Image 1 (tube, rainbow, N blue to C red):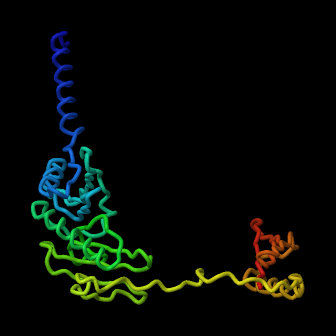
Image 2 (image 1 turned 135 degrees about the horizontal axis):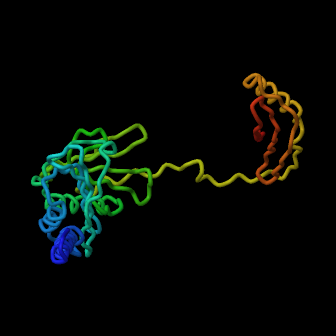
Image 3 (image 1 turned 30 degrees about the vertical axis):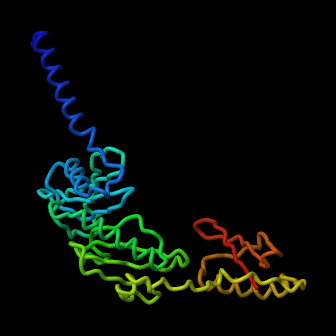
Length: 284
């Protein structure tokens, strides 16, 4: 049996271990209010918080928010996501399920150059301002949607055309820029020289049918029940052909909406295994 001194010493040791663990994990490095001014310090904060060798699968870089998806260098099935918010300390990483990781292309954390990302973000914003796109919040390092090219990317959206999207791609060192624009039939290349010169604005928005002014009625009165017997017979024939085991019993309700100009017929149908209701809408 332990003596009182031994029990006291054991409790003191446990408390000390708990405090050491808490100090090591509870408080992470503080992120500067303007992290893009010192990308090396931002990378050092991630390195401190991660605390082990990792590979980078994705790095999202912005002045208001950054995050990294990393893979343990010694355990290929262990993934974590780390976040950095200016003016806040970094929390511990959030474990990610291996099955949720679509692309496994990566680079060693030591090869991550956030200074390149800052330069890419500046150029992407310059292109956005010169050509009439919205100011982007961030750029991202990672694989494309086909998990092939690992590069820095910026996506630009149009102020006037919500369907317009421009993708700018830069290599790991920030060189070899490429641009492509989303069209209805796929991606189309865009000349980077025109973009840098401000001569490649987003395409104009195509008027949609929903944008057309509503058509006013002609003021005439109509009997929407006229010819309804033929409609009922046709519906009964079609339902009977598709569901031979369904028995049409009766019309439960006829709903007429004169403003929207449609008639809704609700039928009670009976099936051998139970009951359900179907709404048939006859519109003109």
